[in-house]
Length: 204
Image (cartoon, rainbow, N blue to C red; front, side, top):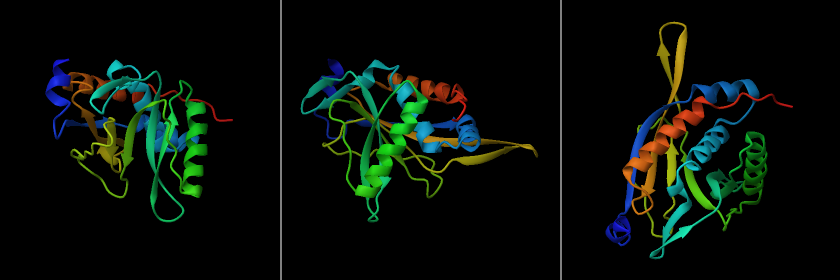
């Protein structure tokens, strides 16, 4: 209630935390199993968010709305040189999430038509892989109050002559009414844990 009173009418209620993640498990699984790196990261983001109850709350139009289900949003280049938005429902199954990811993003790209899931609380993502980025600072519009995770191209960091690691700085933006910094920091820790625990599943 106190956060709502202090931040709901703020002209800039968004806060951004940045963290460098070890994404070696995602790179290995993408390379060995043919998954898209972005899909794997989005699934981990959704799995981590599902463990933090504040992610199911959306501050909007002077109120807090509670949702039952989560989705992850991705930005998709379309066939006409523009971009569209695509919401992908979170599932416990990586294989099911992957099928939905491929089907929906391919449809959005071909038809140049965004897909929005009205009954889902949506965690936004934005991947700017044209270059490596250290961080992305607040972007805010009163049209969207959803949390968002943003990143650039991952980095190869050499550890000696024969070993290398892959690292990815991410920026996590959230509405201060929705959660405090401690909740956001906990989410980033969960995200790193989900990446490390990514199951290595057989492809059929």
